Length: 247
Image (cartoon, rainbow, N blue to C red; front, side, top):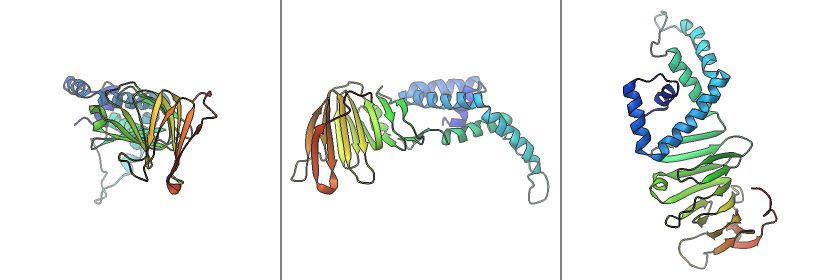
């Protein structure tokens, strides 16, 4: 298993030749693995510049001799070398950083914990600007061609064109499907309203895969905005007043 601890040691050039081969094989086995390493490297570089890991390690080495076992003797922890303590400190920085990228059970969760927009790339090359307090979730199916993700909050998408594999955003009770375009989605978690503003291309905006009396769907082009009101069981189309502004 390729752990974050191993990857941080790799970035710090503290891995063996055998471990290096293992990491190279892991990187070539899945395109998402390279993205994971890149994100860890950003945190690693930032932490190194701020000496966060070294400071934490020095603090640990100061308090460690004072930790006593139940027998009253000094408890030593040989596994906690300076390098591993530094890795642990960097992992804490990762958990508290603006973008938290988790990979658990083939589910990828991306959160923006900052008060400003954060930018990153998805595995298919799609560019995303994730709004403050927003979250995105996608599964392994995304990497296999079924480009579907779930959004909570606000995000701007510049989708990589792939007509054979539509890109779908599930936001609240609505869905947005495109093949390659630019648009903004705002899913209001309180009112459950969903807004879609199209910057280029064509977007399909709908709330159900099947058609019945409670189903809505509309096509939106650049300069148009669609709004879905679940509480009122209504979907409206209007002109985007900020169409010319930079997303």
